[in-house]
Image 1 (spheres, rainbow, N blue to C red):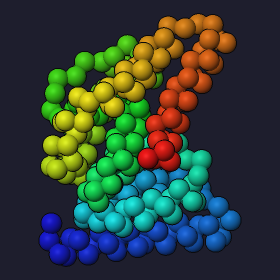
Image 2 (image 1 turned 120 degrees about the vertical axis):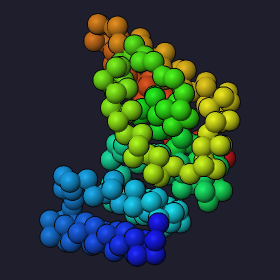
Image 3 (image 1 turned 90 degrees about the vertical axis):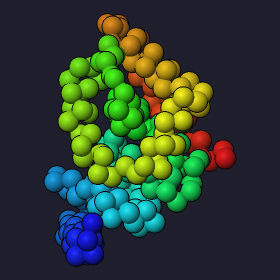
Image 4 (image 1 turned 120 degrees about the horizontal axis):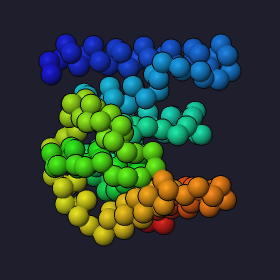
Length: 201
């Protein structure tokens, strides 16, 4: 990437952050139906500004505390933390990426992937994830991929991911409403447990 291209992206970050700030001043909150808050993290990653990405994450978390996020957003945080040598946080957001799209890591590692018969992430979601890999490849770094190749084989990764898949497989076939609610609660608790691990380290 040339210096001119980098400066253009920096200007885009500045303009989009200013647009979000102006929106809050005008309306007392954010609508952001165009998804600027997600795209900004992409821009930081594209120019390799990992420190800027994490500073932006702190602003994002403060201003969008109830935002459910996105697979791309979680992946961006994971890469930024990894490149800043903050491995505990990198592992948390790597696992969170898998929770949001179970196929992402295998596709990034160029492995054969088959759809899993589970709630919310069947064949359609696999096809969607495949369509996003080219975009992800522009952001992901080789050091992160080298680390990811090893990390996905660890118990730290496998135990949580296998539990997540098992719960979603049960949810896929469950028809009793109370049981479905209980399974959803278990899934949310698994996600919270992962996110809260950084408080215990």
